[in-house]
Length: 332
Image (tube, rainbow, N blue to C red; front, side, top):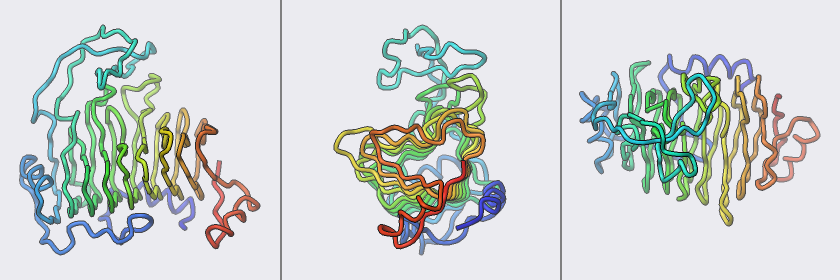
């Protein structure tokens, strides 16, 4: 494993290099659009068409693909769940989420952000240098397999509104490698899995930038980081830089009868105003070699889930029977 110092420098420089290497962890064997000729879409519309078709594709992004205004603007009633100031996130009434909060505020948002581009199987999406940017709309993987997403930026998805949109949604899908990307300014989750299993998934070497004008605590820390909810989820979460968040780092599980397996290692959590790990019902998390710097609550201590996060040599040794090796201590 990388040293913490080396990891920090590598992650902070991640957007200045081409993503290279092979999938590891649960996503081992993922090939994406391997074998297809690399091609550059010339417009947001063409990119969407290529992602949504059934053709094996190796797509190179060399510019900003701006979806912000492609589906128009919606004005409707929303709610104000938080009374802090300045700049609390407001909420759309997604799935009736406002609940007991009165629909007493007018919200105006970009419709494109509220649903992701439906990526089909056997795709590689690769950014060229720092130029590949999907703006104003996220990606949705549902019922697909064999997708690689590398070295792109996904951002500016209605960040002032809860339910404004997710950067990446994975549901009932397998063999997905998300590597060396930059995520910022989203309304809801950076990354979320649906109730269908997200199997053989690796999330690695990404920069999740939670610093935002709008937040639930009016402190510029984005709360909605990662929500892993699928029955049968198998996720490697490794070598990521998680910055200026406040919660769900990640939230795992929550449904009776579900089982989710998460291996978190060598991640750098920095300036987290709330909690990082929240192991809910059905979760099985091994967290090792992670560095928590200025993190208020590295783990919530939720007793509904199972999390093993060693912080000493004696705890590391407990891994030998199951893994055939010692674990690596987390640094608090």
